[in-house]
Amino acid sequence: MSEVKLVAKPGEVQFPKGLEGVIARETTKSYVDGQRGRLYYHGIPIEELAENSTYEETFFLLLYDRLPTEGELEYFKSRMVQYRELPSEVYDYICKASSRYNDTPMSVLRTAVSMLASFDDSAEEDSLPAHEREAIKITSRMATITAAIGRARKGLAPIHPRPDLSHAANFLYMLFGEEPDPYYARVMDVILILHADHGCNASTFATLVVKSTLSDMYSSVVAGIAALKGPLHGGANQRALRMLKEIGEPENAEAWVLKALEKKRRIMGFGHRVYKAYDPRARILHDYAVEVTKRAGTEKYLKMAEIIERVMIERLGKKGIFPNVDFYSGVVMSSMGIDDELFTPIFATSRVAGWTAHALEQRVDNRIYRPRFVYVGPEIDHWVPLEERVKPEKEPTPFTPLEKLV
Ligand SMILES: CC(C)(COP(=O)(O)OP(=O)(O)OC[C@H]1O[C@@H](n2cnc3c(N)ncnc32)[C@H](O)[C@@H]1OP(=O)(O)O)[C@@H](O)C(=O)NCCC(=O)NCCS
Image (cartoon, rainbow, N blue to C red; front, side, top):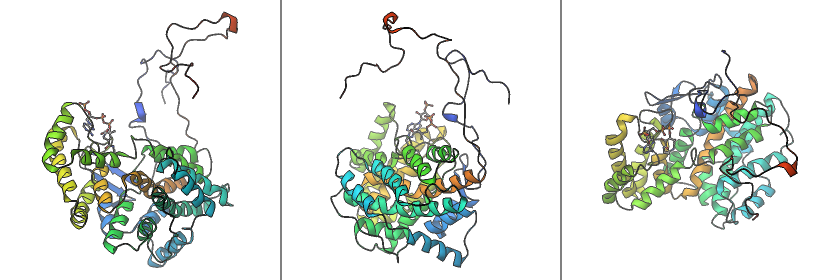
């Protein structure tokens, strides 16, 4: 590698902000073909997985780099079932934290997953079998945590998992307290499959940075949740749905979006750093939205979404702005009766499959992540005794050291 200048004037050294285009490592897990609008998990097109697979099978594929045989899938599912239940202390925490106004569902999820480590005797064991076990344990339990959070937000007691239901059906059962209609269980399964992995996104990279220090699997997943929590990553689906609610009726949609574009507002659920074509996950979810909104009598949200999509593609399609996965997932989930504040925890409940699969891949072929900064601060300076210091006229940072204590 050529010598890079690491001490410079601000703006002097060119570098890809946000590490855009930087290769972090090799992977066999997933590939996003942004130009063609394709997504593959270990070479299999996402459309084929959404049509034929289950979340459990997809998780197996991501973890072990192949589809399971019938016997292997049964055994893998039984392992996931075995881990579904949570320690009572974690349920207690979820119920208490969810009744406090400032604990968002993602904060509770983050802390609950961290707590799980305290109840796992092998949490600190640095071996591949221990990591593999934890990958399955955490993935299985995150669905139980998310469902318990959904209920606790409404003041309802958690519902314990059932061993006879699939991962997706059991999630809906734990959330609503009744066995789901098989069609909705299938829709949930597809939502979980579609969100399970997506290349080197911010939360997967955060997971890998922590794992690369040889930290434990729980800490690595907590880093992933922490990164997904930010509004630039998870959360756009919640905002997209809120936008539709704000628009109110299909006849307002075209004028609303044109005005928003005129004001240079970002339309949530559109655009992507990697996709410059239609996100294949959005296409699949759109097709499910047709049936789900019909069943729920919420067709007006789909109608509004379709109008917005048409206007956006007419205006911005040539710039590569198309609907992304978040545009239709909110319409589908809210039509299934799921509150929008659970959308990001559900995203995490699915993406944990990718996080843990990539973390194991990292552990097998590890090198600690250690990029560099370009130093653009003052040249060599010296410590000054207190009595000689003067306050500068202008603060060097956009925040001040004299904020009031609250
Ligand atoms: C996802 C996102 C952050 C990608 O950002 P990015 O790769 O940095 O893209 P840029 O911000 O460089 O945008 C490129 C151009 O498209 C426009 N654009 C991008 N997304 C847009 C959107 N959702 N609505 C309107 N215009 C958009 C930008 O204004 C910019 O226009 P300009 O060239 O005239 O300045 C961005 O598209 C966005 O904010 N989308 C909305 C949030 C969202 O849906 N996030 C979920 C992603 S899965």
